[in-house]
Length: 178
Image (spheres, helix red, strand yellow):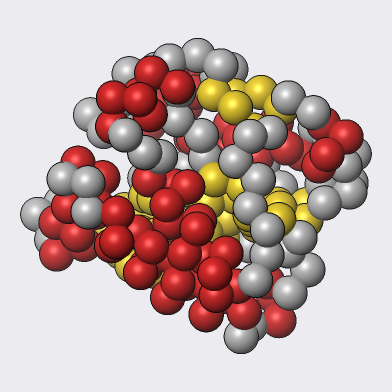
């Protein structure tokens, strides 16, 4: 999965629990979680991934879990941030703290689901910001999201994080689109 980011942003490594295919079981699972409010699915999947990360030395250096933020209006409408819920499950079994307030989405964007690769990147290029860079200085950050399709959202977040001195970034998602 790390190849998605090659030549775009420097990350340590990346992983996903599942492959995502339109019309497949993983799509149904994620839709139940995100759009039907079945947050227990996200917590369970986070715990599952957290156990795997805890038992693999590649993830040992991670200091803090940082979920991709939603814009406050979108989060209010949905009632939760799916990446935060997923991150809560990871935190429980991986044993690392989670920071949900320092990486912020400053611009509301349209959904990415029907956009082409370049439009996805263009849509998120300048929408994220770091409130307090000092809080992340020198940290090893696990950046998490629900699904990676082109990697544009995670890339935009990683660029913001990597602009801080000494930050290293790992990436984990529920699923990767095939």
